[in-house]
Image 1 (tube, rainbow, N blue to C red):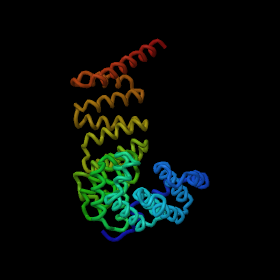
Image 2: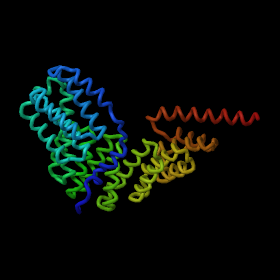
Image 3: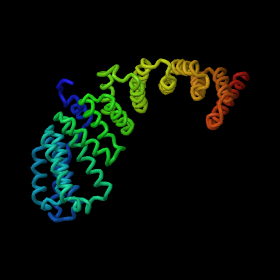
Image 4: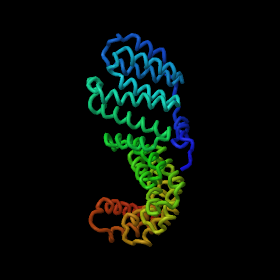
Length: 351
């Protein structure tokens, strides 16, 4: 892959645009910190230090934040808690766009953690927070290496973070970037897919997967449809129905008779109150597989929502007659709908 702007590749500027940070009350945080004894209990002081570094960063006074953290690293606790302070230095450096400096902070933090500071960290953080800190150090350093185009190193660090916690999405997303830029498109797609699963509504994971498909329209025909469906589900969860429909239509290009895709289209059209389209997609599903019971139930419901009560009652009854054991809840709802329709018809006959 030709050399490209890694800031754009990693959606760094896009991410900054999504974050509207109000300048923190620097004086208030400074007053709180100065009121603490230098040798006070470590946890409150470290949290206050974090607050002050964040306050400087929110004002884009990054040099002051770095200078302050360096003073703390070299003085306050004789380096005992430098792991956490160096992690903060890395975070601030990333915010100022200096990924080389951030990498130095993260590497020093990892080395300090491994060598002699673990016992100090574990006196103030519980084991869960220690694991989270290790995860963040590995993942954040990997992100810096991605920016510097050191993709193999980034891959190793991402895999290390995933070993610590495979349920978080960040390392999976960064692993996808590292693999993609090593020409491992299929593995990258699997990493992005896991990131989308784990993240819920994290936009960058979806953007990475969309871009991978755009760059490789035919490299994995058998997987492309599934990836488009995953993206569609993500958009549907965010109530972005037009974008979800677009992705599902793209998925149909790879398999026009895929019943799951048509069913998803029907459901999303239904949420968007586009009942004609929802009914059409449900009917397509049933034309391919007449025993797709959820599609038949969905068709009956969409007919009901559109006001075609007679047809709706007929389809609900078809559903009850055809469905095997295991659909008791749906059958009960279908009976309720049929009774509602009968009540409506009786009321109309009395008018």
